[in-house]
Image (tube, rainbow over all chains, first blue to last red; front, side, top):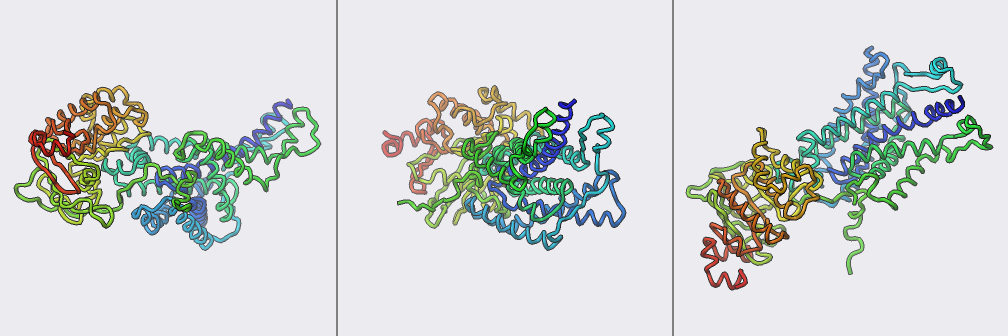
Length: 333
Length: 273
């Protein structure tokens, strides 16, 4: 019985939250890795694209709520998400036209484009704050739990409770669908293959009649869709705060690099590696140790939660030192 | 001493990915096509002048090929052979001269649109998509085609049986000769009217080279014009209907392949006796 309680506690405090967080990181890292693989630079503005897109989602959600429209048990934000993706894509495509296209035309060194993306990051950051402010915003509505702690206890008769929040379930389902759709797109469709061809060899793609600007636009739209979805799910699951989205860039890059930059499969794996490491290292394991018959003196918390970003940093450094190509051989070799 | 800051940051693969990046401006839009001139060859790049920077590499060079014929460009290193090919394909801006194909002046088209106009190009290096399978490489060759291209793919596999067995393998894992075959196959997938080959036999064994030349003759017999640059000048001129000897970006000798082979001066200076 105690073993079961320990298992439930691990599920409740580590596996479920880390899976949801990992899925959000994976979505973000997929966008980063696509831009790295196809547009050939690390997009520092990705976190702020997430923030801007989420801000748009929130504004639309408020509009829908004011109009009395809801999705019942599901958060209204999901209804706003596709429109937010479309609007954010427009902003990103305008940015590409105004900023990045110039550097592509003059064949600037990639590092110059990286620096340009830092500039874009600051502009987007400011834009988001102008649009929605700097405060923390909760915008999740609908049913809060799929399974709540009292329900679970009544169902199983265990001492330890388990909760699955609606936002966590949605995150996992939506991420699985998005990853499946992306892989099917890249491997089976003509446009997806053209994107891979452009990533492999730009000039030869041109010689095959593939319009490079079309590939670029498509990449931006897909990366933006992934970013806005990741941002919205993160915001629904936790809360929205512009500054947090700026910070989340670090674990997202760590995830993409751990998995192997340029490898979509790696981005997904990397997201979960980072999330599970962060949660497992900052969770106090005392309760679980007690269930297993130990009497620990301390909390058994390896790191306080303030240090969670340090975890991604350390993993990042270890990977760059030991296996710079990442878990799945990406393009950074 | 080299500049310690040169190219700095561009080798940090954790933030930049220069692998496979292009040299051609993909943002350039095409201009209009105009009618060609009466009496033109099927393809003609006439009096082409231009280069990459300020200095011209091509100095009024003219290349032409008739329907279903093989034209071969030979010449010393740095003569502008590859540059002339790129100029014909629109990968290089010409200061003077024009390119006309099948009765149309296509000088203002960008490379993407020249593919649609019926040109196929096989670059000397980096001529396959390495992380895509052989079959996907061929599919990308057929990118501009909206119709069913399975028959063309079957023809390519028939032409190159060695790569047909490897259709599920990534092109980057193939041997040099097989990769060349995939590269030629990819270009054939558009069903081009003109196929341009930049040193198709570079780095392959003599046996593979002979076989490639045989295949090229076969392709020409099916009605596709061929324009190619070759290091193996003798073997190439042997199969050429017309040969061009380029020196310093200009035509030095232009004649049938056989006549160039018979010309003692050409033999002594350019074919090694």
